[in-house]
Image 1: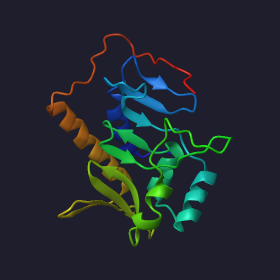
Image 2: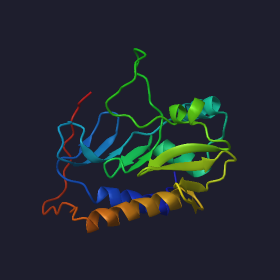
Image 3: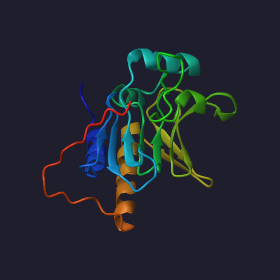
Image 4: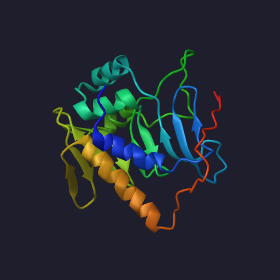
Length: 196
Protein backbone atom coordinates (compact mmCIF):
# COMPACT_ATOMS: atom_id res chain seq x y z
CA UNK A 1 0.00 0.00 0.00
CA UNK A 2 1.36 3.42 -1.00
CA UNK A 3 2.26 5.69 1.92
CA UNK A 4 1.90 9.45 1.53
CA UNK A 5 5.23 11.31 1.76
CA UNK A 6 3.83 13.74 4.36
CA UNK A 7 2.89 10.78 6.58
CA UNK A 8 6.37 9.32 6.15
CA UNK A 9 7.90 12.68 7.11
CA UNK A 10 5.65 13.03 10.17
CA UNK A 11 6.50 9.52 11.34
CA UNK A 12 10.21 10.22 10.80
CA UNK A 13 9.96 13.14 13.23
CA UNK A 14 8.28 10.96 15.86
CA UNK A 15 10.81 8.17 15.29
CA UNK A 16 13.69 10.62 15.79
CA UNK A 17 12.81 10.53 19.50
CA UNK A 18 13.45 6.79 19.83
CA UNK A 19 15.52 5.53 22.74
CA UNK A 20 16.59 2.16 24.01
CA UNK A 21 13.61 2.20 26.42
CA UNK A 22 11.01 2.15 23.62
CA UNK A 23 8.45 -0.62 23.60
CA UNK A 24 6.50 -2.45 20.92
CA UNK A 25 3.40 -3.99 22.50
CA UNK A 26 2.20 -7.43 21.45
CA UNK A 27 -0.67 -5.78 19.51
CA UNK A 28 1.90 -3.74 17.55
CA UNK A 29 1.34 -0.41 19.33
CA UNK A 30 4.55 1.59 19.71
CA UNK A 31 5.63 3.54 22.77
CA UNK A 32 8.38 6.02 21.92
CA UNK A 33 10.67 7.96 24.29
CA UNK A 34 10.09 7.05 27.92
CA UNK A 35 9.40 10.11 30.06
CA UNK A 36 9.86 10.45 33.78
CA UNK A 37 6.52 9.41 35.13
CA UNK A 38 5.08 7.12 37.74
CA UNK A 39 3.07 5.38 35.02
CA UNK A 40 4.63 2.39 33.28
CA UNK A 41 3.05 3.75 30.08
CA UNK A 42 4.57 7.24 30.39
CA UNK A 43 5.92 7.81 26.87
CA UNK A 44 6.22 10.95 24.76
CA UNK A 45 4.54 9.29 21.75
CA UNK A 46 2.03 6.44 21.54
CA UNK A 47 1.18 5.08 18.11
CA UNK A 48 -1.62 2.53 18.21
CA UNK A 49 -1.90 -0.63 16.09
CA UNK A 50 -4.03 -0.42 12.90
CA UNK A 51 -7.74 -0.90 12.47
CA UNK A 52 -9.39 -3.23 9.97
CA UNK A 53 -11.93 -2.42 7.25
CA UNK A 54 -14.57 -3.96 9.54
CA UNK A 55 -13.65 -1.47 12.30
CA UNK A 56 -13.91 1.44 9.85
CA UNK A 57 -17.32 0.23 8.70
CA UNK A 58 -18.43 0.19 12.36
CA UNK A 59 -17.33 3.81 12.81
CA UNK A 60 -19.05 4.89 9.59
CA UNK A 61 -22.27 3.06 10.48
CA UNK A 62 -22.51 4.41 14.03
CA UNK A 63 -21.62 7.99 13.01
CA UNK A 64 -23.63 7.81 9.75
CA UNK A 65 -20.74 9.19 7.69
CA UNK A 66 -18.12 8.21 5.15
CA UNK A 67 -14.70 8.79 6.65
CA UNK A 68 -12.50 11.14 4.60
CA UNK A 69 -10.01 9.24 2.39
CA UNK A 70 -6.74 10.29 4.08
CA UNK A 71 -8.07 9.83 7.62
CA UNK A 72 -9.43 6.42 6.60
CA UNK A 73 -6.03 5.50 5.15
CA UNK A 74 -4.36 6.65 8.38
CA UNK A 75 -6.66 4.47 10.54
CA UNK A 76 -5.84 1.43 8.41
CA UNK A 77 -2.19 2.03 9.33
CA UNK A 78 -2.57 3.33 12.91
CA UNK A 79 -5.55 3.32 15.28
CA UNK A 80 -4.84 6.91 16.23
CA UNK A 81 -1.91 8.35 18.13
CA UNK A 82 -0.94 10.54 21.05
CA UNK A 83 2.16 12.61 20.38
CA UNK A 84 4.25 14.98 22.46
CA UNK A 85 2.76 13.75 25.72
CA UNK A 86 -0.82 14.32 24.58
CA UNK A 87 -0.40 17.74 22.96
CA UNK A 88 -1.59 16.07 19.76
CA UNK A 89 -4.21 13.34 19.85
CA UNK A 90 -5.73 11.66 16.81
CA UNK A 91 -8.80 9.65 17.69
CA UNK A 92 -9.19 5.98 16.85
CA UNK A 93 -11.53 3.27 18.04
CA UNK A 94 -11.48 1.77 21.53
CA UNK A 95 -11.52 -1.98 21.08
CA UNK A 96 -13.15 -4.55 23.34
CA UNK A 97 -11.43 -7.66 24.63
CA UNK A 98 -13.03 -11.05 24.09
CA UNK A 99 -14.71 -10.84 27.51
CA UNK A 100 -16.61 -7.70 26.46
CA UNK A 101 -14.61 -5.22 28.53
CA UNK A 102 -12.39 -2.48 27.12
CA UNK A 103 -8.63 -2.72 27.35
CA UNK A 104 -8.21 0.45 29.35
CA UNK A 105 -4.49 0.91 29.54
CA UNK A 106 -3.32 1.53 25.99
CA UNK A 107 -6.01 2.78 23.67
CA UNK A 108 -6.70 5.98 21.77
CA UNK A 109 -9.49 8.43 22.50
CA UNK A 110 -12.60 6.99 20.86
CA UNK A 111 -13.93 8.76 17.76
CA UNK A 112 -17.43 7.38 18.32
CA UNK A 113 -17.72 8.61 21.91
CA UNK A 114 -16.27 12.00 20.91
CA UNK A 115 -18.89 12.46 18.18
CA UNK A 116 -22.15 11.26 19.74
CA UNK A 117 -24.74 13.10 21.81
CA UNK A 118 -23.77 16.49 23.16
CA UNK A 119 -20.37 16.28 21.48
CA UNK A 120 -21.85 16.42 17.94
CA UNK A 121 -20.83 19.30 15.72
CA UNK A 122 -23.21 19.92 12.81
CA UNK A 123 -21.66 18.88 9.52
CA UNK A 124 -18.31 17.91 11.10
CA UNK A 125 -16.64 15.07 12.94
CA UNK A 126 -14.02 15.64 15.58
CA UNK A 127 -10.96 13.54 14.74
CA UNK A 128 -8.62 14.77 17.43
CA UNK A 129 -7.23 17.56 19.55
CA UNK A 130 -4.22 19.84 19.22
CA UNK A 131 -3.33 21.35 22.57
CA UNK A 132 -6.71 22.75 23.76
CA UNK A 133 -8.18 23.04 20.25
CA UNK A 134 -10.62 20.71 18.50
CA UNK A 135 -9.55 19.18 15.20
CA UNK A 136 -12.44 18.60 12.80
CA UNK A 137 -13.11 17.24 9.32
CA UNK A 138 -16.27 17.86 7.29
CA UNK A 139 -18.79 15.03 7.03
CA UNK A 140 -18.97 15.66 3.27
CA UNK A 141 -15.94 13.37 2.82
CA UNK A 142 -13.41 16.07 1.85
CA UNK A 143 -9.91 15.73 3.27
CA UNK A 144 -9.84 19.29 4.65
CA UNK A 145 -8.99 19.68 8.33
CA UNK A 146 -10.15 22.53 10.56
CA UNK A 147 -8.47 23.46 13.84
CA UNK A 148 -10.93 25.43 15.95
CA UNK A 149 -9.50 28.13 18.19
CA UNK A 150 -11.66 30.45 20.31
CA UNK A 151 -11.02 33.35 17.93
CA UNK A 152 -10.34 31.73 14.56
CA UNK A 153 -10.45 28.63 12.41
CA UNK A 154 -7.32 27.29 10.76
CA UNK A 155 -7.96 25.35 7.55
CA UNK A 156 -5.66 22.74 6.00
CA UNK A 157 -6.15 21.26 2.53
CA UNK A 158 -5.70 17.68 3.71
CA UNK A 159 -5.33 15.44 6.74
CA UNK A 160 -1.72 14.58 5.92
CA UNK A 161 -0.81 18.23 5.36
CA UNK A 162 -2.25 19.07 8.80
CA UNK A 163 -0.58 16.07 10.45
CA UNK A 164 2.88 16.87 9.08
CA UNK A 165 2.66 20.60 9.85
CA UNK A 166 1.37 19.97 13.39
CA UNK A 167 4.03 17.39 14.24
CA UNK A 168 6.73 19.66 12.75
CA UNK A 169 5.44 22.58 14.84
CA UNK A 170 5.41 20.52 18.05
CA UNK A 171 8.88 19.16 17.32
CA UNK A 172 10.21 22.71 16.85
CA UNK A 173 8.43 23.86 20.00
CA UNK A 174 9.93 21.05 22.05
CA UNK A 175 13.41 21.70 20.68
CA UNK A 176 13.28 25.40 21.54
CA UNK A 177 11.92 24.70 25.02
CA UNK A 178 15.13 22.85 25.94
CA UNK A 179 13.54 19.50 25.27
CA UNK A 180 16.40 17.44 23.88
CA UNK A 181 16.14 14.38 21.70
CA UNK A 182 18.36 11.55 22.86
CA UNK A 183 21.70 11.27 21.14
CA UNK A 184 22.39 7.59 20.78
CA UNK A 185 25.89 6.49 19.93
CA UNK A 186 25.01 2.80 19.60
CA UNK A 187 22.51 1.31 17.13
CA UNK A 188 18.95 1.65 18.29
CA UNK A 189 17.53 -1.50 19.80
CA UNK A 190 13.97 -1.96 20.96
CA UNK A 191 13.14 -3.53 24.28
CA UNK A 192 10.14 -5.65 23.44
CA UNK A 193 7.92 -6.34 26.38
CA UNK A 194 4.83 -8.49 26.52
CA UNK A 195 2.91 -6.39 29.02
CA UNK A 196 -0.55 -7.66 28.19
